[in-house]
Image 1: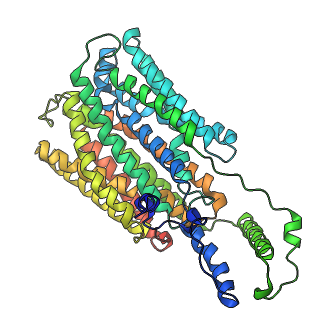
Image 2 (image 1 turned 45 degrees about the horizontal axis):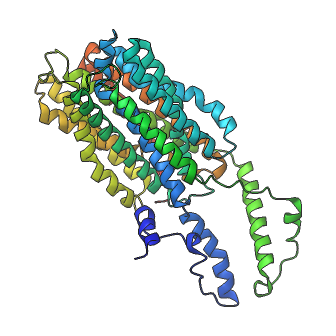
Length: 489
């Protein structure tokens, strides 16, 4: 199999014809058959199209590196904060605060991006690099709030999470039957981040590197700063931005006045007809207004986007605090390294299932994926509530709960934007991407703080509140179940 087909298979199983049109021309016949082909082929290709492979890989890799940057400090942030005079709640704030400032920076960045991705990409790389440097310098400066400042600067780079979602659902470059598949790849990168990140962070903490610059607390930041410097150069060299289509002129519309027989049309006439059709579609989109049911679907997807990241963020920040605490419910007394291993092991075990979902998504409706994911995650929450209330907590039972929570809510998070993008015109893509991303931000920051405070508020209350949030989402999705139907892929 040629190399190009192998790469395309990894993303879509069948390469869009537009990629290789210069190598393989379809055979067409005259008359009505030619007309049918010319009318149907563009529609088929538009549903299956994908962006240039190098640019797509850079976008997916950027999202994955941002996930690693977010999670690599989770294992040691509690100890780092306490070493500099902070508390576990402050540690939760350090974990969650980047999303607050990412949300603040997102709207101004939208005014500068000109509908493209190159400016946000370089902004993300530079912010991540500088943020890690500041986080690493806090130890030598012995300044607690410098780790917070470093995370805030890193948070500016997390704006690219929205752009990566928008890129994978952008109607200009991604067909409607490719969007859930690409969203699945984003979540695979998410799984890499929350498994690989805590493991490496915990391992570096255990190794130590006893000096005032590169040690167990700061080494994750310095290593990620180096990775970002190299990746930034690679992205600068190989990323190809989305082309800005020329605006349709009135002359183009007026050219198609008198219809001709299909067999008599020249190639220029066909191109003119396509231009007119595009203008007509754009006019319909401009007049489009969301119905009450579509607003309900949008609210439901935003709720699940927030809930998934709230619960994932809460568990990721709570595990090091809970397993290292002296509460009677915790028999562990884990070090940051051991806690990071538990987080990483759960994430690593979800990876094969999330990878499989990339291919299953081609044949499964998004609403079924959402229902399956939330059901699995809820099952993990109920098991956690049971073992905490009966004081039967051990490594195996806690791992099972974390695995189900991580797999379920990561799986559910794959469809929140892709489902909306399939039901709404392309002009809404930026708006719904921002809506979903702000929901993610809200869940991440509040979840991280909630997880850091879990031992103080009581672990039973900590779990029960998460179950209530899932219950609200279940009511919304059940009420709007028929309206959640969308194309597969």
